[in-house]
Length: 374
Image (cartoon, rainbow, N blue to C red; front, side, top):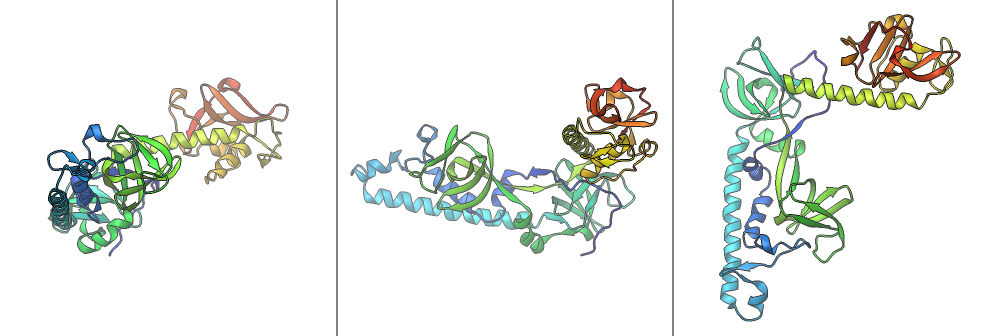
């Protein structure tokens, strides 16, 4: 399929947004819906146990223990089991029908980078945002080789030439999405095995979300900070997650957040060299450097090339309007000198041969400008 070549750069970080629960419950395999049938016969809220298990509820609110003791006939037990199986079949059939309908309306971005989401079915129309490679949108209509899609917070047009739909999208979907288990019990044990008698790994809480890595006999293997463990499937809602479109405003916010985090990381990295020597013409963070060699070496560590000249660094990146808008990682420009802004009116820099690499106030010299590199 023809690729759309874009001349804009963007972060590889993808914004993952959940699709509607109804659509996603139907999407890809029907195990979650089938398990819901079993859950309908499982415990009420008061029956939820901390070990992730519950008594089987038969017709007339009679549990399995009573049935075994002879208070319920074998016919009633068989009827209850048959009802469960029938419900599973109906739910599976409904899920299959919903899945087939849903997959007809999914468009997957097929590009090396991103495709534009536009206001109308025209390449010259306003750009509302971007849908990155393997991003997913729901097709609402088609017009002159364009799809009208809803994706994330955006509703707009994407070029059909850059989208995968139908059976091809169905085959691709499991590879580009992932499942999250959203806990629907006040508290739940995560166990080391798919067995309520196995050891407890940790406890999870209502509303928390965990990556699903496997399924087995009504249990979900989830990833937690304590390691991978098993939870009973009836105590979690499983949702599929996909990358979706990002509006211009959302992209600006994301890039600003990423810039700030990178700047903080650069400052943290720079501080480990405080106390090192100043060497004119040097660019070694350990053996010695001058002011521009210091900033150059720091940014080089983060994959960005700067000139080894303070005058040239005066024009690097973009200008920042005033110290009130500066953020960690920005380069502070002085007369014949440069420094890294740390925040709170402080800088870290290779000051001179007498002081070496130090932390000082921003008023070390008269500030002439601020440049943002990230």
